[in-house]
Image 1 (cartoon, rainbow, N blue to C red):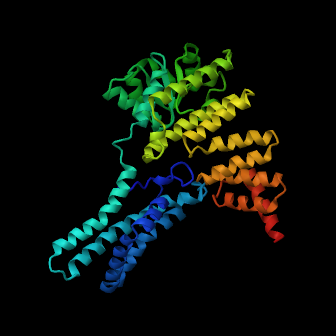
Image 2: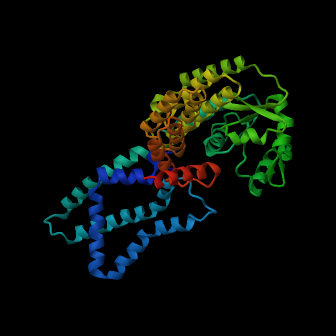
Image 3: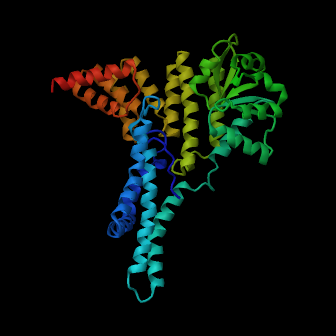
Length: 424
């Protein structure tokens, strides 16, 4: 019942992280560790080599982390180590069970059936506690969102995706519910030979979209954007670059539409459509009911918030800063995990030279539990502008703890930290 998916603590889902689950174990079900210690003591008495064998498993996680920390696999967040610590966590669970079994066999009790019931009662709480966090039978947000996304698309549309959030729910709706089978979904992150063959066998007329195991963005743009048949969900910034030669990407409800570069757009009409789209979505889907639900629901909320955040970016690029602020604030209301919208809102106030307001937005993000490296960097930079070297040093140190990959930005931060420490 434990979800040990290796997500970062700060982004996007604290409840899915190993560290969160370990803290939860210590705070609420600490007695489980006692049984693991009993097992360790038994191994020590039985044969010291058994204990060393167990410790080898415990150290397997950190050792794997050490191997994966080479430059070819940069660890951009210090808490990414949690995915490697999940191995020892499994062994803690296993040896707790062994310790329970040893205790059951060795304790003298008149009727061991009562002892079994006692142990069952002790372990029923962590089971229920974790099961309620990771259960999936009440997870309807992803399906409801996918249905709404599909409802906004014209007949025979092509929608590009780069994540599981649309691809697999879309296949589910198509093949099991026969919902919008006319829509073609292409995951541009797969593109293996088997995937391309399967797709082109299914849609022979679309075989020209692929060129030497690569997706041909230029050809797709020229052939399908002119008929309003090409869309994106989730809308990642990379897509703007992919289509930059002949096309541009604009927000269109919960998705993004790819249009030819010479297409004239009416910003007021786009805003009106996007506002109406979100209002209609909220009427159909109760966002509040999912905020404190399962991990997958939080993931779905984060994708929704990302789409709204990109709407804000689009408005900002078109000199509509107040519209953008409205979108950024909405994104934060949808999901506390959407860090980019916090940074983007704060950046607008920074450009306006309203440093205190920018500072307030960033600090609110930290207070809401967002420990993302972007926030630490932004706060450090703001305090430099406010001529507060002490606070700048504090936040820059926090930023470097995430082990960001080398860049001019990181080098500047390191230089500031070293210079500050030389005066201490």
